[in-house]
Image (cartoon, rainbow, N blue to C red; front, side, top):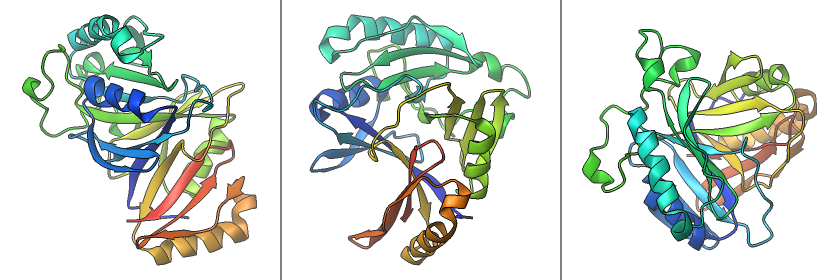
Length: 282
């Protein structure tokens, strides 16, 4: 079993960084921390993982909504304000498929699609958290993901304040098979939230991945992945040896060689459903 220190990064592929990054910074409160040829690294100021956006060009495939990322606000009135703001600025940011606020799996949310075809969610769990046990179930993912909320003046003029990048999502064919892989191979927690839904997370943090069982779904490139941090390059090499030896029996469907870049070692693998994961030294 891999023993990750954290679920450290989320990766998303877009068509144009020039079109997508302003959506993330101006509508979802991300901040740019680094830029490289073909990618931008962002971080939400109240969140413990980074978000890397890769430019796939105009031929990058459309993304399905069950592969999306979500941020969270505190109050339901903020969801209504976010919907109004998104509609008012639809043309400015090239937004499509803005859905009216609705309840789903305990959250009150609005969804929209950015110009690079990725769906994004602004969610709220205020109703769930009114119950004493509301934030404790399924690994605590519905509890607040922040210690101190961001003040309104950190994100003024919109009527809502994204407090954290809470989750990404994946599709799978069988939640039992995928859950076993996440636990026994990747060393993560996998909580069965509903018959067809898993919440996957590192035990030391609240941000998570929603894994939903779908009758059919698309597979995407290595630029749509999640990164698990391990202690050292030696642990990455050891993980590669283990996966090369036993991966086919464990459910690994593809395994890349280890790469070394400026002292950082990493490898990419795909899970039983063809979703990509990265194991990287911190």
